[in-house]
Amino acid sequence: MKKILSLLFVSALLTGCTIPFFGKGASTPQNGDTVSVHYVGTHDDGTEFDSSRKDGRTPLEFVIGGGSMIKGFEDAVRTMKLGEKKTVRIEAKDAYGEEYVEQTQPLSEYQETITQTVPTNALTGNLEQKVPEEQAQQLFGSLEVGSEKKIGEATLKILSVSAGEVLISINDPKAPFYGKKVEAGMTTTAQDGSEIIVKSISGDNVVVDIKPEQEVISKTDTEITLRVKNPHPLAGKALNFEIELLEIKTTDAVTE
Image 1 (spheres, rainbow, N blue to C red):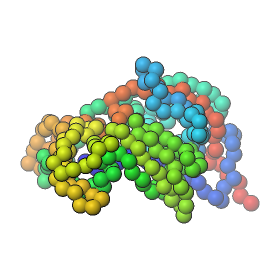
Image 2: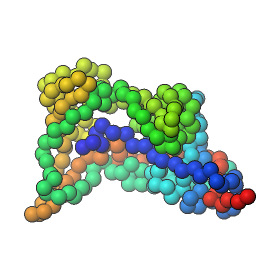
Image 3: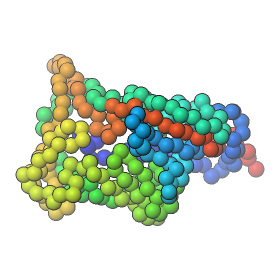
């Protein structure tokens, strides 16, 4: 259930002892190579949901085979040559997953209602979060203060960079109680269909009961399989990307 209130960040790795070659070696990116791309993401109706070409944004960098990107996007970049532009359509299963998924867990861990303590600002959709510098760089492509990134309808913005950490503000209009004053007894429905009931408030934290939207598919003496809604805002949707491969930093290196 923590997925209701969390944002996923990706990581990158730089090693200071190597001298990278740009656009040399293999004609297409290989595992371990760091690539830089520009992209524009749209839904089938043409609505844009994300773009690295917006003002204040920089190209996206990620490591091929690093597991930081959705499968369909990385698969497309793997086949591209330096300087090439490509338009691809990625089905939901190779993007952020189908709208509903099956999960199997020990029967002893199954709960119809989960009681959880969460920060009030996580429920209202306006919060700040510190993340490691390398994760922020992979997410934003640059650590310039003021840079923004869209994830679904949420807007992330870099507020400051210091001591290996990046302070990010998160504004999420899909938060359970966005723009409201949270009070005991309030109820709402989260993005994944779960019912959230505010039990009590203590300082900056709120105790909530969470009743997941779930269907029991099967049950044994030890396990239970549930059909649950995928919480990602782009789950269940095919995505279109216009991609331009700008740079390939190979894993080849020279030593002094």
